[in-house]
Length: 132
Image 1 (tube, one colour):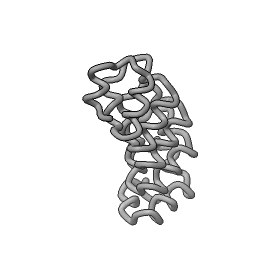
Image 2 (image 1 turned 135 degrees about the vertical axis):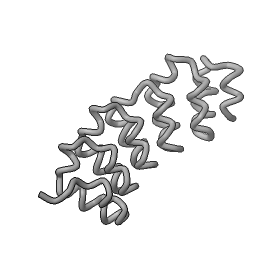
Image 3 (image 1 turned 90 degrees about the horizontal axis):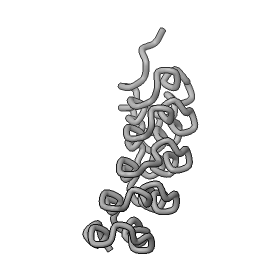
Image 4 (image 1 turned 180 degrees about the vertical axis):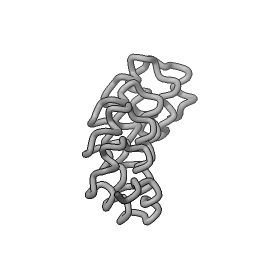
């Protein structure tokens, strides 16, 4: 299964679900209603977090958590409200410390979040706010 298979039948839920498990880009060609299908999108983002870019569930906390847990940098594609959610950002920086750069300023001021980012990667310090 691949995104090419989905291109042939973009509204076939079973096909899109199977393809999303193997090729997160399958969402690119999926019918709009399937880009809102929680199971399909969750399957795709677990495979590769950046698949969230092609979904219509970028403000769904469960979906965003799955995406950033797989690929912390996927936080950049999440809805802006998710970049202000401490739990989401914490999950992202635990996977990729540099994901801190996509967090809201308020969350960047959270010492536990910054510490988690730096523990995951010293480069996370680049995105941390300057000391006061």
